[in-house]
Length: 341
Image 1: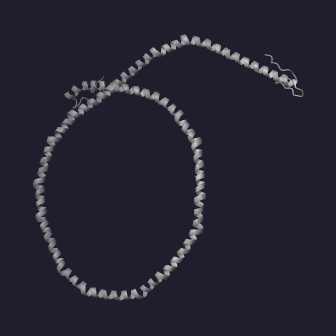
Image 2: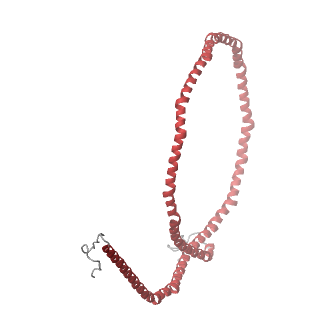
Image 3: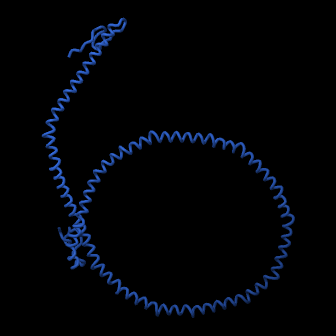
């Protein structure tokens, strides 16, 4: 395996400032530990992958045969027709028992009754409420309101508006201006100036000192630890895991090939030899005998059928007035017999 300094190394990093004594010291132990940890995981992963492929194929077939096909047949030939029939029955029942009576009740009872009641209520409200209210407003309230309004406006203007205007102009406006100036002066003297002094001469120097302390007491050590320790260690651990994963893949493939060769030698080759050497020589004569026996049985059945056919023909010929059968290869009245071979 090449080192990380080469162009095609596993890590892909050159020998820069990050490769110090710590990096060189932890590189080989990290890769050895990663290989020891990753190798069983990679072999278990490859075994589970192969087993999952086999189980997945058989499981798909079983799921299709035992679940999907019966479910589709049940849905297509039972549930769908039953649902359609139930839906048609429910729609017809609701239409006959609910919709048609409701429409008739609405059209021939409620609509005419509502129109009559509405017309009566409109006439009653108009006679008892609208006409008296219009007359009261037009002939009583409007004239009284005009007179009362004019008098009230004059009284308010004469007794209230003029003193209030004088009070606002000559008293409240000067008092408000003086109070505003006094408040501005007090805020500037007692709040703004002390706050500016506190910010400029106390808080800014304290913040600068705290920032300097945090920078050199916290940030600089953390950056040095990150750059010189954590980043090289993490890089070496990543490279070690990559190398261990690839090496574990090679080892797992080699173990798989060895198991395949062992199964072939121990199981497949003896079974094939037993089939070719022991079972096949016995199977061929047994198959030949079975074929001959089947042929003899078929010939016997054919002979029995021919005998039955001839007996039936003789009986028909012996009965008076019975039509004589016509053979496929001859004329009416010729005796039955086997066709020449």
